[in-house]
Amino acid sequence: MVECAEDGCEAEAVVELHVPWADNRRVCAGHARVIARQDGVVADPLDGRDEEWP
Ligand SMILES: [Zn+2]
Image (cartoon, rainbow, N blue to C red; front, side):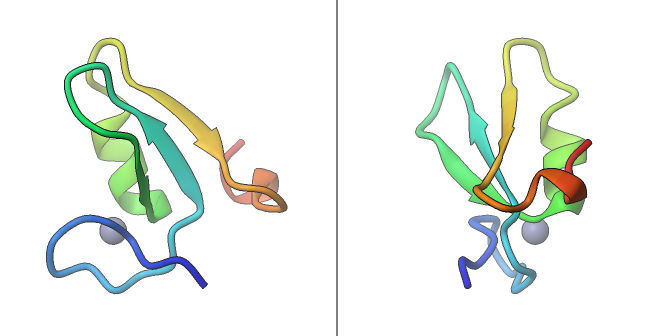
């Protein structure tokens, strides 16, 4: 499995975030919801994870 890229988070990453001001990162669904609220961030479900990121 891929671990969430956020510090201190050991949840499984299910989404790849495309962040204009930083490197792409893979994060868990919880972190993706928070980070994806910011302007310009695009959240892409990882392969096979589409159901976890509607
Ligand atoms: Zn996380």
